[in-house]
Amino acid sequence: MIGHQAEKLEELVASNTKAGPRKSKKTRFIAITSGKGGVGKSTISSNLAYTLAQRGLNVGIFDADIGLANLDVMFNVKIKKNILHVLKGEATVSDILIPITRNLILIPGESGDEILKYADMALFERFMEEAQVLDKLDVMIIDTGAGIGEHIQMFLDAADDVIVVTVPDPAAITDAYATIKTIAALRDDVGMIMNQVKSEKEAVGVFEKIKKVARANIGSDLDLTLVGKINADAKVASAIKQRALFSALYPSALATKDIEAIANKVALKLERNVLVTSNESGLSGLFRRLMDHF
Ligand SMILES: Nc1ncnc2c1ncn2[C@@H]1O[C@H](COP(=O)(O)OP(=O)(O)OP(=O)(O)O)[C@@H](O)[C@H]1O
Image (tube, rainbow, N blue to C red; front, side):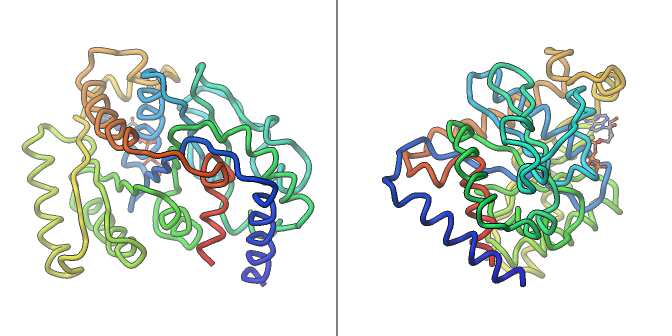
């Protein structure tokens, strides 16, 4: 059933581009995920998106599972409708978008499984047409739910970069490793962010241990890299209590310096992005890739 619907969507997306492909910048899709919940995935996604937007990049942050993620809390906004309402024809794409800052937009999502149930031809055609408003995005951060459910895997497969967040406690490390193992079946590159560490040394130490186990058990084809670390910092929790982003509220905090270093690495990769046909960018590009998964 789902396969058939995906095929219909695939056709639609293809026919949409027949009129003459427009050129636009390629959107880089970065999925941020974790094994265990509560390790800082949403904190990192929101602060990284904000930091990149502050540099003048056009950033979208896609809440891939509104039921579990809490980006609305991070950004202190109320979400009334999400992407499912658009697919059901109850809202337009513009209706659901929540502007956070001048060049940062929150896109409230839903689980991939739910989205596929609404693969109605006419609605999807309209959706893809409307989704073009997001074609100008330089980067879209996808905040996936925790764990390795099937719809999360769809996002992990569709993304340009996948970053697994963990904290240095043994249970979280075990879950992060299990997640990496699952992702390794989909792709051969995975990045990691070590959150809530005491130092760079601790981050590198934990990362090297995971890398060693991965090399022995998953194989040497997996390119596992440390994207960065975020120090355990009381300012992070303090900002969340105030419903603010730590990088906005505390520009000189240790955690802010850490997120800036991660943003630097991401920005470097973005510079290498090339011009592509518009169906590969923005929200429509993401959905096109999700459909390719089937
Ligand atoms: N670097 C840090 N220093 C101190 N506290 C932190 C740090 N990162 C995260 N936290 C704390 O951990 C809590 C959980 O973070 P967050 O909600 O981002 O996790 P999550 O992985 O997105 O959770 P979920 O899986 O439930 O969405 C936050 O409320 C915050 O107080």
